[in-house]
Length: 551
Ligand code: ATP
Ligand code: MG
Ligand code: MG
View 1 (spheres, helix red, strand yellow):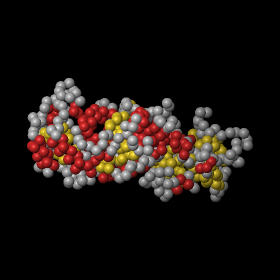
View 2 (spheres, helix red, strand yellow):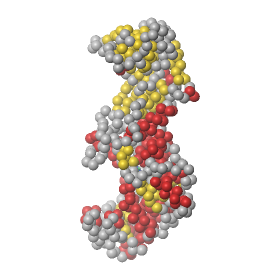
View 3 (cartoon, helix red, strand yellow):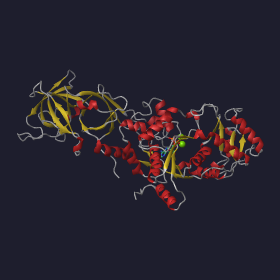
View 4 (spheres, rainbow, N blue to C red):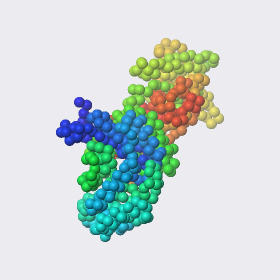
């Protein structure tokens, strides 16, 4: 039994099966196509598809497309791509709430006929006053006692487009004094004369989330309808509607704690604002916590699934340290990413005692502990680049890199010793002159004077230029949208550092888009999914080497 201890829903479903309350587990993932999916949705996807898999059940992908104003086919397409990329496949065809509009309308008429719903003409302000407050009961709408005939007629005319947006709504007739505000005659239908991406102009009234969701679940035979905690107060309404309608099955709603990450916002509306205002370069900008952004950043689907397993599923909301998600990808890439060398801030080194026309091919393992990943060839030449930060004219003993008059080992190659520097008119070092210590590939120098440390390098004549994008957190504040915080004002102005002239070992130009590497001593990088080309390589930094997460 591989029962996860940190998932209370797994235990509930196992009990339901054991007690015979259900014979097959049917779940659904029900996004509204009004934005790209984010890491919070990944948790819901892993949960819903994961439970179906664990119990040999099925999981539907259903677009909860009841609010055409904010929805689009672009979002419908991106959501399917993201779910599949995460490694899940929905049962059967994709579902759309909009394909149930006629059934939902028939059920609305059913409620009216039974005296359980009415057309209300209060405007939004009036309706708010009548609704009361948490401490004050509401007051019945003056339209509450319309006859069934009048209600049926008005509903039909709402549907026919006779009335203006906002002039009338259909409401359930429940209890204006209920302590649960959701039960105070909630709205079931609104007039919205907007074209719908699936149903065109067939409808000008659209059901609310509350009227649609449970009924959709019932139509699809969903057994466990899993949503986030903010819907707990909607559960009585969910059940009331199922109790009062001739639905074909009886789903049950369960709530779990949503994923919140520090230094991150997970709200489609806010992510959309970042895109619309040009703070980031689209929904899949590698700094975005969208699934497509994380993918472009170099996160693997496996690492995101692992992360979702690690955080578990509980009945309370909490804030997860983003360092834990970073740990998951670092761990994955440490094990799976081939090693390579990249010099981000090239400083030329000329090896005075190495022949000008010579190229030596040194072989280096692609991975320190996984021999099966093979070896690669590194071209060693008289002119090399090292990182400017790996050289100093003078330094104390803590600086274990190249210093004038001292030695350093070039990774997978020779020990060299710095002899002199060339400076430009501004006094900047433009070149280091050094000598190769002979016979030091794989050996210590014969004279017993050891190298201080090991640094990366790339042949200046055989290596290639690359664009590398370094990323920092998109928000510099730990809780960018908590309370009164203005998340737009808390965007980190230095979240992207673009390096146009990095130098990479030649083999890297053949990287496949989305292929990941560890650039030794720098971190993990991925060939950009859209822009990387052999003749113009582009790498995105996924994550640095140092792990800041500890449990
Ligand atoms: P947002 O507030 O970002 O728009 P949403 O909940 O409105 O998110 P939906 O498209 O309605 O987005 O969500 C689809 C499913 O994903 C829902 O079942 C929802 O509960 C779940 N979900 C959304 N955000 C999170 C989150 N942060 N953690 C876990 N599940 C989430
Ligand atoms: Mg929602
Ligand atoms: Mg939403």
